[in-house]
Length: 331
Image (cartoon, rainbow, N blue to C red):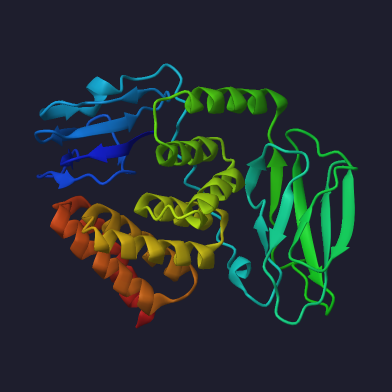
């Protein structure tokens, strides 16, 4: 995985299969066959999949594969496309797990968070799995796992949460997490150290770190670093788009929708057509999963229009298939 981390001046991207260039804003994922075009005085920083940076600084066209040569072992990888489709994970009446959810974790004492349920005075939390059957009761929707019963590397654990008034996630929403192996944990820490040494701005390092975590299925870690950044005032389209994508992947579609909508507003404000198209399509998927079919239909239509502006006829045709299917379901 390769992405644009910083842009100075007018920098444009020409996607393989599209007929024209579109302006780059930062955060865009790139393919080796894509091209960059820099105007006079422009500059761009690209993070390659081996965590090294490429910095074209002169006017002209540049093939991405020439600046980011194929790494023997990519550090940044495109995420697994599998998604959790659990609808109950978006039901506000149950204390569904938010974190760590459908993820690997680095720590043996994760902070467990869940949805606050209206009217609940306390919650009983249970973590179960190999060698562990831990229970505790708290009044707030968050608790740190004690570590008294040691979580084992490479093992899967499940979290069940119940309110004091009898509402439980049992048989409704039963996600879990897996502890990363010791070897992979050490590798990731080494890669983080390598990343921190790169000549990148703090904002770019946040985005790169989130991609690094996601490459290792450390979804909760990626969410945490991005949520912290936006709470500190980093209102970047790429941050919200990536947050929406990760929430969508772990099955938290309501949260994904919130982040996507913020990202979409930012993309519209900067006239970022590619981000608009991608977020509109993702919102359609989320709303379809949430059974908001008319909303999904509108999102797909908006995405199709945005892809037309981009000159991406392949995407236009694929979305037409989704639209035809969805219209049949609605009727």
